[in-house]
Amino acid sequence: MQKLYTLAQLTQGLDVTIRGDANCLIEGVCTIQDSKSGYITFLMNPLYKKYLATTNASAVILSADEGEECKTNAILCRDPYYIYSQIALFFDNRPTAAIGIHPSAVIGQQCEIDSSASVGANCVIQDNVKIKAGAIIGAGCVIGESCEIDEQTRLDANVTLYHHIKLGKRVIIASGTVIGSDGFGIAKHKGVWHKVPQLGSVIIEDDVEIGANCTLDRGAIGNTLIAQGVKLDNLIQVGHNVRIGKNTAIAGCVGISGSATIGDNCLVGGQSGFAGHITVADNVVITGGTEVSKSIHEPGVYSSGLGGLVTNMEWRKNSARFLRLEKLMQRVKVLEQALETLIESKTT
Image (cartoon, rainbow, N blue to C red; front, side, top):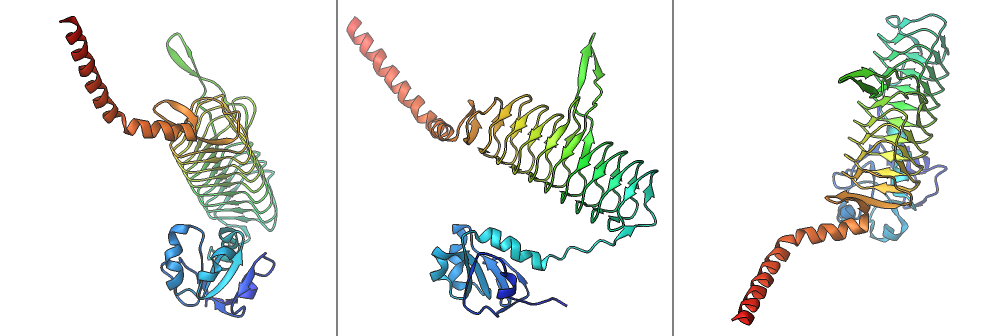
């Protein structure tokens, strides 16, 4: 049976103002356009403001500036999306993992697995692995030798950790992700490629979240490092010895070549690519589909097009000019013809 919460219960401890009935009962969350009574929604994107006057939701989370237009109960706040994220936790329907080790799991020698941890069906835990309190290892995971998994970290089904990988506290890794496979290190000798041993590891600090089907290569000599609070979307490739700074968020289908360094608090749009051995400063925004072929030393918004990486403002100007290129060519032809006519008239 679905549990009901009052608006007062849902917002306890949050920096909000309830306008309306604080005892209004809420049974779930919904979108503002497909809303229904008994549910709560939020407004953040101005494109959806047109639904505010007609929404059937019992409550709306929104900024104080837009509160006057809301005809139902309102949760007024500075950051509606964040407040929504905290309220939505009440309705999270993720199944609870059973504490303990499933009988079908294979556990190696000299492992230290806290009694409050959960190890799912058909997991393979190799020798000398340490799994701390409250960690959850989903069904079918493979944990390589001498890995360390800290408190409250969760691996969804079929995650693979190679040997000597370290995960911090409260890390979340979605299904299909592989951590610590060999980086792309090959040396050509007399026309033949030879594998270069990858001797480093992968260090993932606290509160990192990694989406499904990502691959994070181990370092060639030192370690690949994913710093505290980093958020990685699905289908991201992180090359060997890459360093990603604190609280950086990277959208799906991004590729980061070996030994690239991305700073703190960066935002990277989907399908972007980073060349190897470059450095990106803190507080940089990379728009989707950008080719980052050189280092970025100053904060700002960057995009790329036909001419390579430039500031976002310059890219917008160049894009507008490119769209006018055909008209410009026609004008040039007219001017060339006029010039040719003028030259002929002077020579006759």
